[in-house]
Amino acid sequence: MARFTRSRCQPCPARTRCTTSRESTHTVGFPPRELRDLQLRVRTEQQTPEWKTRYAVRSGVEGTVNEFAHGMRRCRYRGQRKAYIQHVLTAIAVNIERPSGLPPAEEALTPRRPTAFQNYLDQREIPRPKSGRTLGT
Image (cartoon, rainbow, N blue to C red):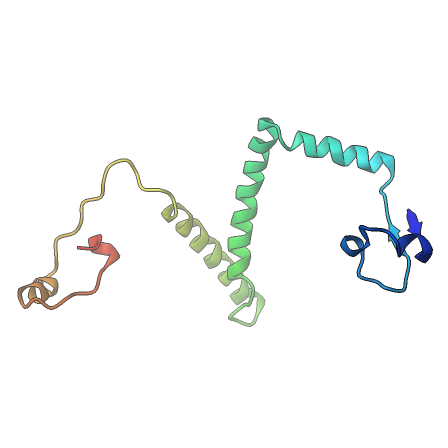
């Protein structure tokens, strides 16, 4: 740790970028050499493709846990049995929702044919709301 007294800290040209205190001294902490060396080694390792591949798995797991936790913030029911059922249903919902977020397959989806109601609107030139089911037709 390094301490700068007021007499040394006040005339410093970089003081405005360093501290906002007018009265007190400035203290700078330095980690022990072993910790600094460990940080440098780990940061260098994090730039390798092997580490990024391993971390991608962890990132995916953390994303799933985060999605699951989002649905679990508040339990709608009282009692352990009902809470357990909510936990199971939330896990099922996460498992169902996950594949739907994947990019579409290579083959293009064919749009559904318009319904009778949509045909009715089209015949009378009434604009109909866009629907994801009809792919914007």
